[in-house]
Length: 92
Image (cartoon, rainbow, N blue to C red; front, side, top):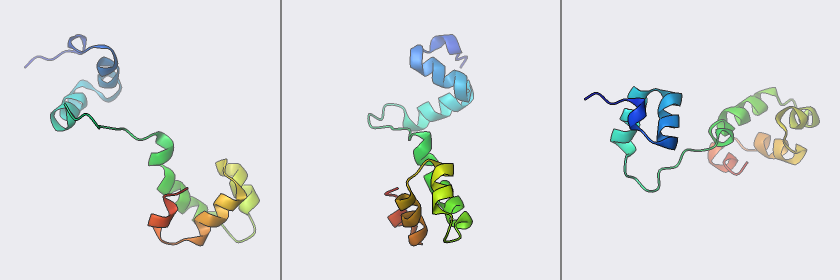
């Protein structure tokens, strides 16, 4: 079937332009019609990777620097570094 960008309306066209028409069609086939389809904010997507990076850089004395670097509070840095269990980190 010859589906074109101009066949799509408003936001749907924007999405297709951003990810490509073929990928938009794949999304539509998989998630089309689902009312509760939600795309996470970028900050939520990168949270686990950010927390791993913070734990890797943390040396016990640099919470203030890391807080400034990641735009978080020092307390949040301490909490991220305190837990090894990723499930507990989803709060931050």
